[in-house]
Length: 303
Image (cartoon, rainbow, N blue to C red; front, side):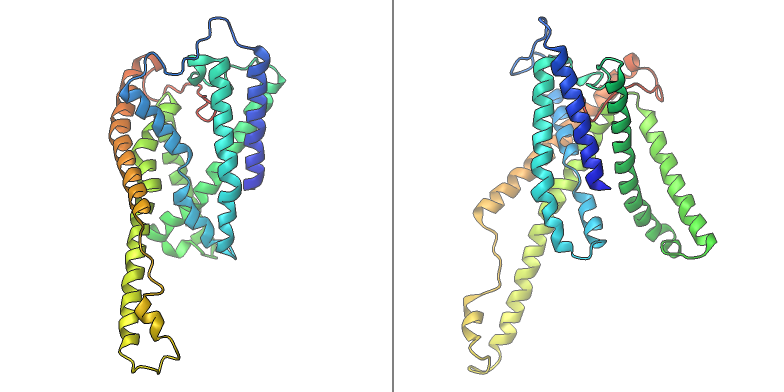
């Protein structure tokens, strides 16, 4: 299902970029290396969307827990990360060259001619969103049910299954309300990326890794002390391993500097990006309409 979803998204990208290239670059299109109206707020607001694009970390452990061989999950990064990075760069580069500063709104799909390829791209993008929503909703519903009504998670009776379905529908209703609340969906993505995606997907993994290494070192040190208390010669030659500290995993200077850089960048993006995203939503409330005034906006292929 996930691979089919990837094929759908790649197909949409090919159709949209082909449409943009066929229409060609207009004479008045401007694509400066640095936008003339670029501000600190707009930079970090756009950076928040990039964070959101790579914010799948929270789902990885849930998917690994369902696998027969979780160690095989590392293949996802070998395949998906280069494909995702190449797709993002290709879409952004082609869109910015041919469309220029107008690439972000209303979206590349909405700017396509209303022909059969527009219908195909829209249908494929819709299926892509449905699959993504389905996979994430299954994980979120199960997680929420474990806290609200644990008995209905793996319940076999009709009553427990209806309770689980009701919980899923309630979560779906809340998600629908939030999605329709803000007229411009891309602004909501940026706000979520700055407020949640950065800390959850980039800051917390660093902290968890550092904590895990320290716990590993502490357990290794305690094991070494226990082995050192055994009389010499009774460890079958393992005395040298104890004295050499084999098994300890020290954090290098490069790792610590990299972690500090990630933490600093995420903190700045979270602070400035969240404030900028909130201001943009308030400012565009007048032009995009009041709350729940939905606006066509291809947040996935906005350029």
